Length: 324
Ligand SMILES: [Zn+2]
Image 1 (spheres, rainbow, N blue to C red):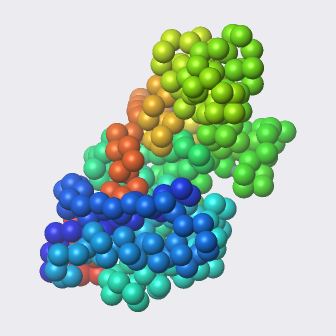
Image 2 (image 1 turned 45 degrees about the horizontal axis):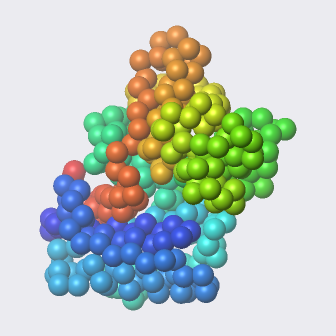
């Protein structure tokens, strides 16, 4: 049976957002709440309650299933959460728990993969068979499509573009490694650079963008000051763009994608960073691969919900033997 809706769940370190999504990508109903901090089962309970809330009033047979994006390393084939640094979900059978209590089909995946699926189905990467997605937010994640299909690797753990090594002697990364892309481009890293700049008179625009308190300087303060024309803030984002560009040159040389899509809260707002990264690719990638376009993602905060819903539609259709 052809279903009209899927439920997409985007679990973040700070909030959980759930949407009832039509096949063409319109979110017809949504609900969100802060992510509970009182243990794994409180998180699972919140997911179940939000799924019930958006699914209420729609016949069960009309809903293809539930897709859940987690800020975790997910073994996609076994549908298990392996590692999760921000939430205590490692080893918790999220899929079975939600399935048993909602009586709906459930599929889980890494949130970066699902943002990639979302941009592919409904956003900036629509129609591109080979592209790389990078999400710049508190963490740095992403994924890729190769030959028209999402590439997850042998166990579903692939696509961790944020943990590409830039310099082993570089700053510590939240994953425990050193000098990974996330250690330079995650929100905490950009905020630290913003704070260092804001201590000086030349960094006044960054301090002003934070409301005037040094402790409140965030990555967003740097982006806001840069957009307002501040040279120091622009300089920080240009340097971040240079580092991102180096990583992209590696991806472009290896994978020869047609498109690189930069998403996440920082990626969608920090134009200077993305433009600088695109320049580095244009000048440094191997000849023959420079027709790649570097663009910003367009789905914003909805990318996670839409990608999770797209996965739920795909899983439903393959169970039913339907083709997209
Ligand atoms: Zn790392």
